[in-house]
Amino acid sequence: MSISSTLRSALVAAALGAATATMLAAIVLPGSAQNANPASSPASPVSIDNFTFTPQSLTVKAGTTVTWTNKDDIPHGIAWTNNSFTRSKALDTDDGYSLTFTAPGTYQYFCYIHPHMTGTIVVEPGNG
Amino acid sequence: MSQSDRDDDGVSRRKVLECMTWVGTGVLWTVSGGVPHSLGLMGEAVAQEARGLTFLQISDSHVGFDKPANPNTLGTLEEAIAKVNALPKKPAFMIHTGDISHLSLEAQFDDADRIIAQTRLDVHYVPGEHDFLDPEQKFYRERYGAGTKGAGWYSFDANGVHFIGLVNVVNLKAGGLGYLGADQLEWLEDDLKGRSASTPIVAFAHIPLWTIYPDWGWGTDDSAQALSYLKRFGSVTVLNGHIHQVMQKVEGNVTFHTARSTAFPQPAPGTAASPGPMKVPDGELRKMLGIANVTFKQNEQRLAIVDAPLQG
Image 1: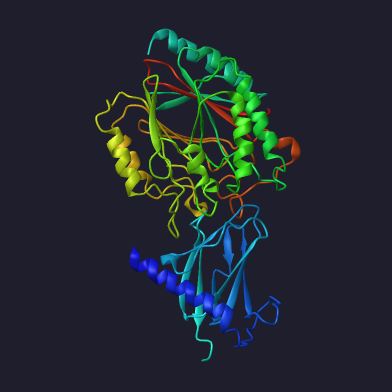
Image 2: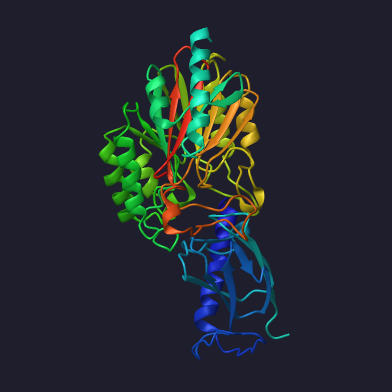
């Protein structure tokens, strides 16, 4: 319990640090639909529609911000397997949740309200 | 069962067939020896069963939901409560099988409480997943959790019937369904220990404790364990919400039943791309919302559940 809490804190701290300090890598992603402000990292969308995350598996470069938007008439919430990141608040219709991924790896998540809904974010090295 | 009771059933059964042709809703189910058969419509059923314990189930009020499927969930909850207050026999108490609120906002709980209080009945709650959405997951327990264990499970007795309120909406696992968890299962086993197998049991929880449609999350991962503890009892009734429609199944001595919502209907399993609020023509909505009235006849292992729509 204490080990996973520590790990989680470290990961969150790393993510926060990256979000505020290392925004210099301007990686242009094909299909990066969000027109973010110049200071933020490239963004990549996941829609939540009909109780499904689309795309269900998304591959991004390190440093990418992924934004989930709930298109359903029912709230959803995102929680991370192994508590890799802090879970989102409950997302009502049209609410969004963003997370910047700095460390390469495979991150699995699910809807903590409807746990049969699952998704994966694969983060590849940003400078490779 | 006495001969006169059987005669009662026969009359009602004929009556219900007549009425069903034009009413089409509000059927009373009586379970005798594991075989359900319909008895009659709500009004006459309540009059007939007046000697037993009667309690009410409401579910899925989703106060705060305001999308096209029902922009006025507070209004339909009020209609449901008016229906409760108009019953010819006042129920002993009410159970609410969760999703009181839509987003666990204090104002939504306040509104629900204000309307439900108009029944002046004791209300025994179990939470739905929509009641644990506040960041600290504390509002539900602060309001409804007094005297409960864990996330809010408990049991109580009324008229010789043992009632068990279970919580299967917290600590849900990736890829899973509803979840009771080891602590609650251990408590349940302990709670049932030493009780006579002739004690009628009513277990209630938000998400169905039987697998209805796992693709939509309509089931509970570890319910089989809970049901194994209930197996030895002669009369077990499991009441759930969550799916916003009436479904019933009998397995051995266990009757499973789900209630309508007071807020919005959901599609039948597999008939749409996903679960969720279903928009129906305005004139149809109140036929798909409602309450359930449950009666036990004393000294008989019999249960009657009347599902009454708000309209129709």
